[in-house]
Length: 413
Image 1: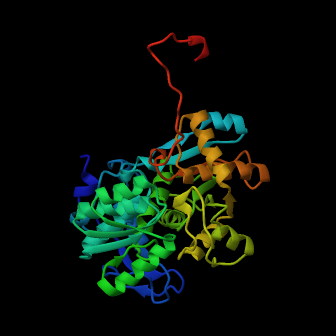
Image 2 (image 1 turned 180 degrees about the vertical axis):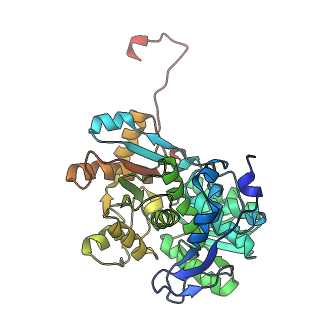
Image 3 (image 1 turned 60 degrees about the vertical axis):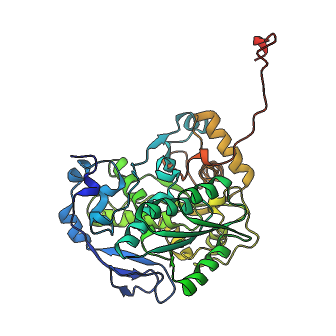
């Protein structure tokens, strides 16, 4: 086995068609698509019987440890179209001290901050850009709260594709800078991410760029799906009892739910599923309201605000897919306050030495809240997703100083 086998060895591909997530209408593969005629996300479908015959657990275990190891379950057909920046499998990190203190079962964090560009957005955009390259797309545009734009800029530059990216005014400065440094034309917009999305949609009609907005193209789901494939493999082809997932556009939650179904179809796992928990911020919780109201579509959340900018999505095009996964799994949707998010980030950092991003902190805050209200028991193994490196976010300023030229009171230090 060579370290680059997943990127250089041709493997059989099994994509059969694309399918409207609402109506089931079929669309041809290997063509450029955005939403279906019904205005809903398209899902990639595979000949899973063929995958079952072609791929074994032993063959998979022998491959290099990156997410391109799952090529039979991914849409890129030829290695020449793969756009990679070195996507290592992300680790599962136990939180033993917090387990003891909370009196719960296993608490495991899947740390997506180890991916290129420092976030889980690298998964979806690696696949979206690879398919854009395969389909001859030359200009991609996107609205972003930060990390997705950084990933699109990086992968598109790698592929030689032009990018134009729009961010809300208050997007963290580090994200704006990395987007620009990695080759995109980036603009601040006086609005929220869905306002930026309207600009992308209007520009598509006027200048012809490809709309890479969340769930408005079919392949980001396939990239995010690898989180579920990877997680099951890392747990020896098992799944946890509960997954806490920070939910804005919800691509990863939808993708993982799809991954578990495909893994069962090829015989890699059984029928057991984790309960999927959609975690939102109290200042932007459209999925929570829709879940509580028992409806499938979530109206736009007005005056959205939260320190966890990655989940500040007032309206998600895939709302019904998120809610279906949550309900089918026996999970739930939960909102946590910004104070709870901040306290969670601080607690995990101080107790375990693990620096979470605010969105990841929201999952720990949601877990603690769920233990108290009884929606999660202390015997259930939980996995939380830390979706980006905590190093990309503002940290407290420390003012303590020491004058080395005078006497030092060591007992007071």
